[in-house]
Length: 482
Image (cartoon, rainbow, N blue to C red; front, side):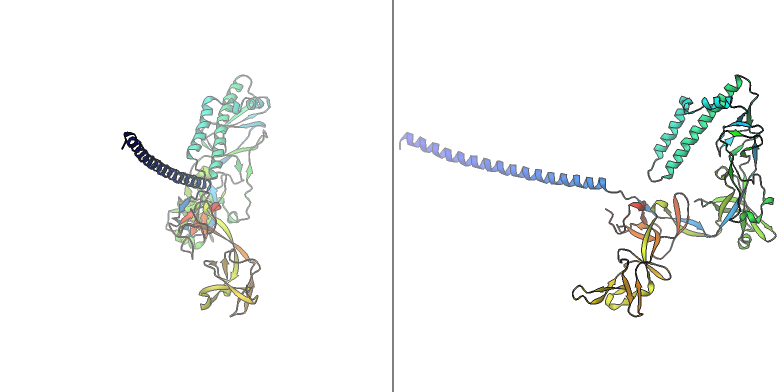
C-alpha cells in the first residue's frame, strides 16, 4: 500500500477518534450544566419559600401567651370606711390674687411657701409673666429628659395605663420646676420694691397639701355617725383651687400633718365577734390588688359595731378621699390571677336545657332542629351537636355558629318547642393549651388596674397553669395558632 494512502487512513482514524472525544466532552459539559441548573432551581424555590414564610410571619399578629397563676381573694363583703386624719384647713387672711407653690398630694416642709396673695395684681402678673416653661434652665430640661428616658427604658407596649402614668409624671415634674422658678421670681420681685400688698403663706408644720375639702376636715371617731356609712350620705367634696382672685377668710387648702391615719368601718356583729381577739388585720382598700396590714381596734357603740383600722403609710395616696371601700381578708379562698387584657366577652344563644335529647340514634345529647330533607323535601329533624356549652340552672349557652336566629328546636318526648333568638353575653378568656383559641368562661371576683382574680374550680372553667391569650382582642374562637 502506498504511503499516501496509509497517511490518509491514519488521518481518518484520528479524525473519528477525535470526534468521539469531542462528543463525550460535550455530553459531559451538558450534564454538568443540567446539574448546575437543577441546583439553581432548587435554591431559588427554597429562597422563595423562605421569603414567603418570612412575609407571612412578619404580617401575622403575634400571639403573646400568659400562664395562669394562683392568688388569694377575700370572701367577705365590702364595707364603707371613713378616713380619719390629723388635718386642718388653711384660709387666706387677705383678699387678692393667689399663686400656688405646692402640688396637690405633695409634701410641704415646715416654713415652706404654700401660696402667695397679691392684694393688687401688678406683682401677680409680673410673677406669672416671668414664670413658664420657657424660663426653665438646662438642669430643669435635663430632669424632664430623665423622666422621658426612664419611661422609654421600661416601655412594654402592653399597658395603656403606663402612658397615663408617664403623662402625669411629666406634668408633675414640669409643675414642680415651674413652681420653683415662681418662688425665685417672687423673692426677686418682692425685694425690688414695696411688698405691703404682697403676702406669702408658709406652712406652720410639715405636711401633705390637698386642694379638696368635704366639710369633715379633722373629724375624729367620736363624731362619726351611723348615717355616714349609708350610700346616700353626701360628703359634699369641693375643690379649693381658685382661678386667680380669692376673698379674705376663703379656704385655700387642706394640710395633713401626720402620716399616721385611721379608717373607721361599720361591720356586722358576726365579723365583729370574729375580730375581737385580733390586734392586726389585712384589708383591701378600694379594690387594690394587694392587701394592707393595719392595726385593729374593735368598738361597740350601743347596737352598732366598728373596726378602727390604724395605718402609718399610704395616706397621700388617699388624701382626697373621705370614704373608702374596705374588704377584710379574714376569710380567704384561692383564686386565679389573669390580666385584664386577656378578658373578653362573647355572645351566645340561650336554649332551654329541657330541649336536650339523649338518643342512641344520635349518640349523645343533641338538639333537634326542624328542617326538610334535601332529597324528598319532607319535614325532618336535623341533629345539632353542641360539642361544648356553658349552662346555668335553666339554659344552655350555645355557640352562635351552630344555630341561626329563628331556628326552631323541638323535644319530641315532651312536645316542647323553642324558637332560637334569646341571647346573653359571657365573660371569659381564650385558652390556647391545645394549639387553638378556645373560649373559657370565668367568674370575676376582684380586680385592679391590671389584673382580675377569678373563681377557680368552676365547671369547664380555667385551671391553674393554663395558657391563655394575653391579648383577647386578637383571638378568634377555634382559630389555630401557628
